[in-house]
Image (cartoon, rainbow, N blue to C red; front, side, top):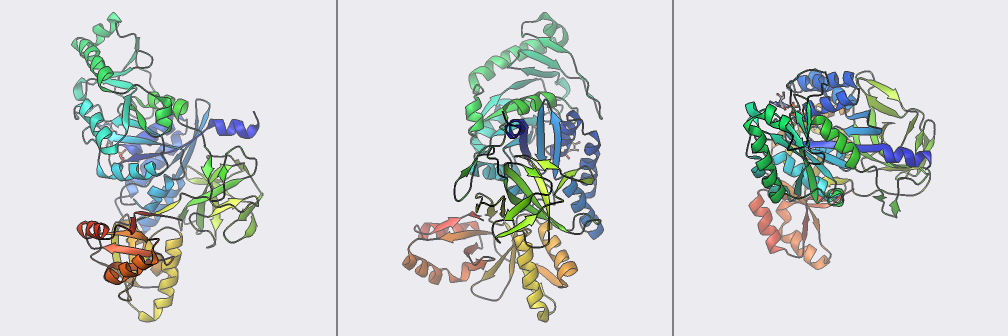
Amino acid sequence: MTELQEQIAKRRTFAIISHPDAGKTTLTEKLLLFGGAIQLAGTVKGRKAARHATSDWMALEKERGISVTSSVMQFEYGGAVVNLLDTPGHEDFSEDTYRTLTAVDSALMVIDVAKGVEERTIKLMEVCRLRDTPILTFINKLDREGHDLIEVLDEIEQILKIQCAPITWPIGMGRRFKGVYDRRTGCTHLFSAQHGGRVIEGEVIKGLDNPRLDEVLGEQADELRAELELVEGASHAFDLDAYLAGRQTPVFFGSAINNFGVRELLDAFVQYAPPPRPRMARQRRVTPDEPAFTGFVFKIQANMDPAHRDRIAFVRVCSGSYQKGMRLRHVRIGKTIQVANAITFQADERRHVEEAWPGDIIGLHNHGTIQIGDTFTEGEDLKYEGIPYFAPELFRRIVLKNPLRMKALHKGVIQLAEEGATQSFRPLKNNDLILGAVGMLQFEVAAYRLRSEYGVEAAVEPVSIKTARWIQCTDPRVLERFKEKCFEYLALDGDDHLVYLAPSLVNLSLAEERWPEVRFLATREL
Ligand code: GDP
């Protein structure tokens, strides 16, 4: 094996998908704890504390700052190098959340046992589907009373359309929660409630028939045996290929806050989750062990750290390796740049990277020439695919306070769109400028940045648009008729693509029915 192949085999790059409050932050802290990066755990907390003060712009800046330092977390565990990419989730939910999922090799889904499958999880799962991303599932908060577990699994299968294969099974729930049984090893891991940063191993009992089990669990031992029989009949056996193809999710149970069930999860993750895999570029398929460096930009973040007021482009390494000082070709603009100071993000200090391997993320300083979706190579003209724009779900009309600043406004809006912060739409019927986003905070950030960076005072107003769809139609005559009839709903996006802005979902489905030859797309590839 070459060093490149060894480094690839070790890499596990993933993100956590969950609905707010399911326990993503808590679980992240525990994972970092196992990875020996304890000081990072505090960073995750700090970010959380800051996130409720969004009306205060200092806090907003601060929050964005901290969220960047924790946006890629690297740690070693069990011989693997794990990259955990943060998916902003509360007020800071944005298209970055979606696009981050295009840069990972697998995902971890966290579900609150008392809530089951929630709305945000459904959306994030749809994004994972675009690339058949393998997904592990952690059912959290077993120390609380929740739904019937078979029902929760059933809900996952029905709503998320993915088979469940329970790897562990909990013993009781809420106050009766005693531990988990590992169906692979036949071992019962007993729960001992613990808080804080210590890793304590509870008692492990081998074998389901072990009398020690009856001794410690009492009547719950027989309950467990009966339940396991039921689970055997009602669920799928673990199938590694089905998991890797995104058709089946191995399921783990536990309590993140008590650090219980997390080690089993992490062990399985390192064992089963895929290392970097080949990726499609427009020209050809690229395998990670090709010696030449390639990578693409999935996120651009601005003004994150008061000490470094620049933009950082996040590049996912797809093949070869990055070595400090190497020359990289910025394919879209056809220029070669020397990269002396790519960065990685660890805790609250930014470290300069000496080298990076497939699956790793590097940050490039960007002075406005890098856009989301850009590809970097060692010279080859290559364009990575599959970094989409997602149809916004929130819309605002942007109203300029000083009409003379129109040009500056357009420049700012275009720049924000290129960074993927917000999308812009110009309706055909009037001169409005509409911003679209998937998270509310994006509008506040947009207005704030227009003011502070482009000197434009603008307000955002509600507008009655429910959703957007990109229009595709191969028959030019149908397209002309469509444009005529649907004129009042049509707009152009930042790249002059035709978009249908629907005032309601009913309106959209009627239009889709009426125009079977027109495709209404919820994502657009960059
Ligand atoms: P996030 O919004 O998904 O990042 O969720 P957090 O990690 O912030 O957790 C949301 C709330 O659930 C917090 O109050 C946590 O303390 C709590 N929580 C997280 N894990 C558990 C758990 O295993 N059991 C219980 N009872 N509460 C938990």
